[in-house]
Length: 396
Ligand code: NAD
Figure 1: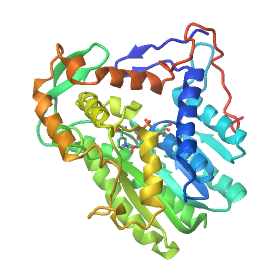
Figure 2: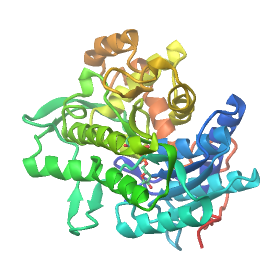
Figure 3: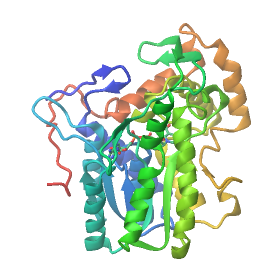
Figure 4: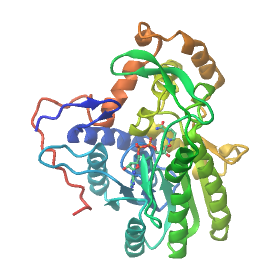
């Protein structure tokens, strides 16, 4: 099959196995070149196939030499379609991990279900005994509640009043105004049900009940705060409410984990191009500006650079500044630097379709987006025939 990108709105419906392999290999090489870390031994990553979860799995393995179990919801290839990028990434990750002699097994299916929790527990019991780090990095538009069977859909909407602001159609190079109507109470509650902390707590409670959490266990979930420009659609919107719930859950879980000398913590990460962030209005334009300014300053980072710092400077250190006043880990520190944010505020009103290429790094945004799906990777011949059917070694 000749595999080329097919963009529909803010998703790409194809993925390239060799390109994904290369993108994963680059992250692995980054960690190897940064050097060994103090870190966990047995790790469960929930949402392990793309974005921050994949970077966490790579860092735990190649930085700390940990054994990992990865959970994700991805599609393998069939006669008509390529696999999803997370499938190819996980195949690449396992190949590279196994090549270096690391334990890595993956489970593909719905992390929100009881069945997946049971399968993971069984695997931990059988292969690892206990886990000492659980990364919770799901980003999903939907959740089926494992007890009631109710299906919740999340929305990305403001709360209280409608929002009108700038956004970009990055692939058309058009800066436009969007208006988003405020969420209903039901939509707010549903978004909290999908992206809040209930499922995270269910995982930790279940694994604790089963005696599968090691002494000193840590669990980390990821969040975003961002600047005032994105507050209406992010921090003060439906997703922000879910993230508040995630933080409340972290505090409750930390109390429960005290008996194991453990902790639950939220790491606030930088805005990066992932399948999840591309779907949020306003954010792609903000990211395009942010990338340009951070690149000019030499502080630009992707998922892997941040997660390496997360492990080294915050999770496995006694550094007193590794948490902020509210208990968050802030690896968005470089994004939130005052000079960067001030420049974004100044530039924001001036951006138009005409000057988009000069004022922002919209090209870098699009490049990163293509790379998520294994495209635009140097050294890959995208006109060559490639077999879309790739096996993840630990999955039958
Ligand atoms: P992503 O879309 O790249 O990854 C999501 C992961 O969740 C994938 O591994 C996917 O397979 C898995 N997943 C989704 N639904 C699932 C299900 N039902 N069962 C099993 N697995 C499922 O997302 P991301 O951007 O890396 O986001 C991860 C976390 O990081 C989220 O909490 C997000 O809010 C947070 N975050 C993202 C950004 C950003 O800019 N992208 C910034 C800060 C924080």
